[in-house]
Length: 384
Ligand SMILES: NC(=O)c1ccc[n+]([C@@H]2O[C@H](COP(=O)([O-])OP(=O)(O)OC[C@H]3O[C@@H](n4cnc5c(N)ncnc54)[C@H](OP(=O)(O)O)[C@@H]3O)[C@@H](O)[C@H]2O)c1
Image (cartoon, rainbow, N blue to C red; front, side, top):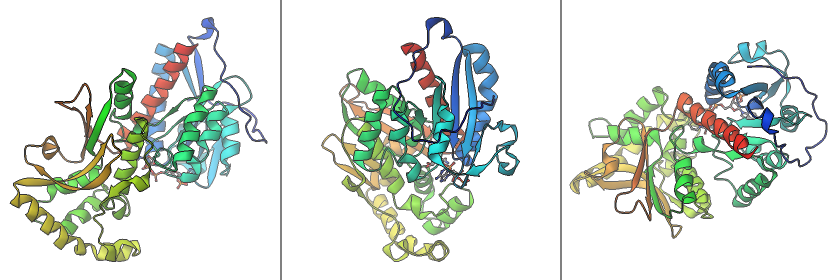
């Protein structure tokens, strides 16, 4: 990608409306991009942006300029990313992390469009979105902490869109699967959401698919951990909190003011190991085995299967739990780490709409972020 050179602003960002491009300039569009969080997803995104850049410039006249990258401690500005991906010390410039200065740098002093992509899982970064949007900077993210964080902050983020800046977060729910956009399309075309049900955790889907009684549940958790399917701390998956966050994001998308406290979450982590340091917890994972074996036996006695299911209805009832489903249920036949989301709406009532497929992984998550970026560019074109 190209480089850009602009001065660091020393002062907080004032509100600014985005410029409307004159018709004759609409073919060539420049977007200044800043990446926050060059981790697994961020690095995959840099690869995808770099690979797509010649095609986008040729076919769409879109010129993506990577103007900076910021990680937890340091940031790089005016960088050409050829050597950047995974080679931080080779970057041309580095300074201590300063998110305000970073945003000011990406925005620049001219009338260009600027976009910040937050690929961190950091709440402090999410706390900056409203300010950035109000200053006219577009924001795209797979980070769930804004969408599921304090409701007042979420509402402030949405209100900040009045500046004309766009905020998109498709990859916060089931990575690259078109879940948020699908819900938005249903609602925008006049449909009414009645309920959402789904399996939003690839890790828990895999564990449920494999848990047939031949191996203790803890052995499967260890295998999933070794395969990289779980978070570094598997309790982050087993607690159901990550799934609850996705449910809150979908509820808010439908206009329902849900918060994390409103979701009844059944954790699979036994209380005795919930607060232990990670190493000690991993040593005592076999404490999961007896309760999980009992749940499996109970499901089989009913002729059903165990699945980790999130449920939300229009009365605001929200739950995340291990459910016994009939063997004929659509969720009983998912594969590997598949996520599945089922929308029941006024139109899709007798036969709900299903979105299904791999719901995690850096490549597919980065592609979801990239698609959001392209939708923002399209919307600017339509508005110009
Ligand atoms: N991986 C997936 O399959 C997947 C799927 C869906 C959604 N997501 C979401 O995507 C996001 C990224 O996931 P990941 O797997 O790529 O995580 P990761 O590999 O842990 O990368 C996180 C990145 O964020 C940076 N970071 C942390 N705090 C920061 C701060 N205050 N300012 C700037 N940068 C900061 C880290 O910097 P350092 O390198 O300095 O630590 C790191 O580069 C998360 O929100 C995750 O929930 C991931």
